[in-house]
Image (tube, rainbow, N blue to C red; front, side, top):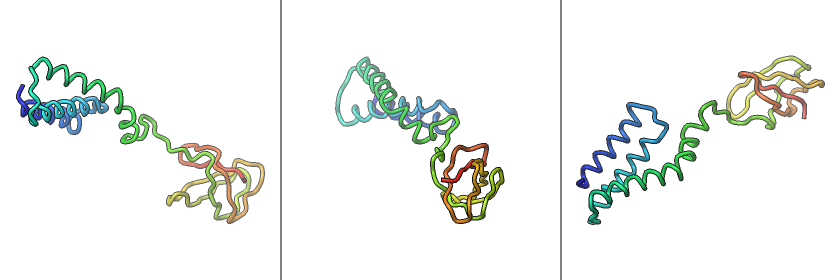
Length: 143
């Protein structure tokens, strides 16, 4: 196949991944591999067609097994069910909070609902530890 044929094939794979289907980054690596084979042909590395197809398959498999999981987790945030761990972090309680009561606080630049699940009152201005998250409520306890 000519170099421009590989470039077009790579663009089709990448475009299909980005605009048409959610193939979980498999088509990105096929597209990258086609672009790489096209680039090798463009710079003058002459290969028979059967070698081009083997190189395409090898590049695709190696890149998928080497980089796909890391790239997918970085871009998609460990999908499905991405959760940024807040457990164990400290939050500042702005108003006194009795055991079992709810309140609000600012953490990481966002206003959160908080619930004191501990046995002691958390005084205004003191730190509390996030034990877990229940929906959108941070369940906290005095440090």
